[in-house]
Amino acid sequence: MAEEISEVESTSVSALDMDPESRRLFNVRKVQKGKKPQFKRTCSHKFKRLDTNWRRPRGLQGKQRRKYAAKGALAQVGYGSPAAVKGLHPSGYSDVLISSIADLELVDPSFEAIRIARTIGAQKKAIILAKAEELGIKVLNPGRSE
Image (tube, rainbow, N blue to C red):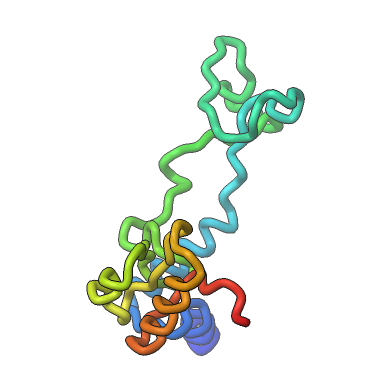
């Protein structure tokens, strides 16, 4: 039984050394996200003009606000991730937005990965990718390799 748990823990976060407690919380977060329902706006399936983005139901007779079972779940505190691993990328790295080559020097490759800003052109992106590979930094949005 303990061997199965250690196998699951070792495969969930790849190439990142976490302390055992953070790794456990990361796996807890993964399980919780699987159980979390999609929070949809009331009646968004009925009207094209209503987007599915979550809005808290406020109507006096609202079935979703009154927690009727078939009307969709309400967003609540209990659905959240553990605070220690909240906001991490699914790979386990902390996400850092990069908009220049100078920003790469501030990144710690042991627990941070970079995301290149969308305003960066192809030439500059190629330079940033080469520099990141040289420094051993993981890139979350490398794009197509040609």
